[in-house]
Amino acid sequence: MGLTIGVDIGGTKIAAGVVDEEGSILDTHTVPTPPTPEGIVDAICAAVSEAGKGHPIEAVGIGAAGYVDDKRATVLFAPNIDWRHEPLKDKVEQRVGLPVVVENDANAAAWGEYRFGAGQGHEDVICITLGTGLGGGIIIGNKLRRGRFGVAAEFGHIRVVPDGLLCGCGSQGCWEQYASGRALVRYARQRAAATPENARALLALGDGTPEGVQGKHVSEAARAGDPVAIDSFRELARWAGAGLADLASLFDPSAFIVGGGVSDEGELVLDPIRKSFRRWLIGGSYRPHAQVLAAQLGNKAGLVGAADLARQG
Image (cartoon, rainbow, N blue to C red; front, side, top):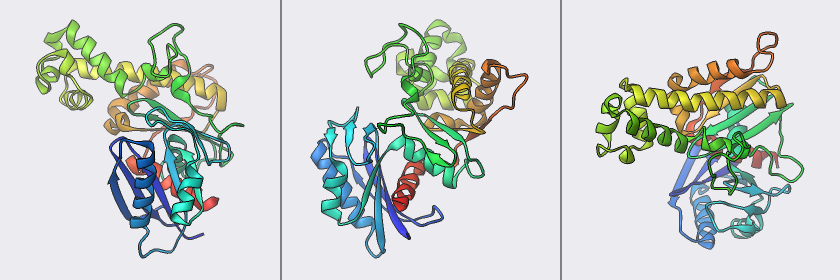
C-alpha cells in the first residue's frame, strides 16, 4: 500500500497528514478542534479531504485519546471528548470513502517511534509518553500488543501509591499523578512555596507566586540552573524510572522510549530517569539493562504511526 493519511486529534487542533511508506509526511492540513463530538467528526473528515487533495490516498488512520475496541473501530470511552461507544470508523468511512483504522493515540505514537524513530532496530519496545498525563504502548515481537479488548498499555493508571493522590480517572495513586507534566508543576509549586529563596528564577518567570508557575516556566528555569526547578525534574524522574523498572519485570524489552512534552528537555530528565531505573531494577546487577531512549519524532509520532497502522490494515 502506498500513501495513507494519519490523523492526530488534539485538544486545540486536529492535524491530518499524508504519509508515505518511509514515514515521511508529504502534506498536512490542520483545523481547530470543535467543542462537540459531532463537530469533531466533521473536522476530521474535512482535514482528511483537504490533506489528501492531489494524492492517491488508500486508507486513513485516526489516533484518538481513549479506549478503542479490539476491532479498531469504536471509541469505547474518551476522557476529554463526550464519546461513549462512538462508531468513529463507520462515521468517517462513510464520509471520506476510504478504509479507516482507529487506534489509541499513545499506541499510534509508540508504533510511529518503533517503525521510524528511536525504536528502529528493536523487536521489543515499551514506549511511555510523559505529557499532561502518562500514556504508553507495547511492541513485543515486532507487533503492537493491544490486549484482548484493545485497551492494554494504560500505564498511567497503574496504582503506584495505595490510597495516594486522586486521579482524574477516579482512582487514587495512579502513576501519572507522580510522573507527568501535571506532577512536575505540582512538585515545582510545592517546592517554591517551601523555599522561595531557592526558586527566584522560577518564580520570576511567572507572576511571582508559586500558584503562577507553569510547566514552561519549570523547563526554562531548570535550563537556567534554578535549584527548585532542577529538583522538581529529578522527583518526576525518580517516579518515572521506578515505573520503568516495574515494566521491565513485566515485559523485559530491549528498549524503553520516552516521549511526550516533558521528554523535550532531553538529558535534564532522561539521565535521572536512567539512574532511577537502574536503582529500582530487580536483580539489576546480574541482568542486562534495557536502553532508555529519547523519542525522535516529537509530536508527529502519533500522526505517522496512525498512518502506518492504516497501511497495514
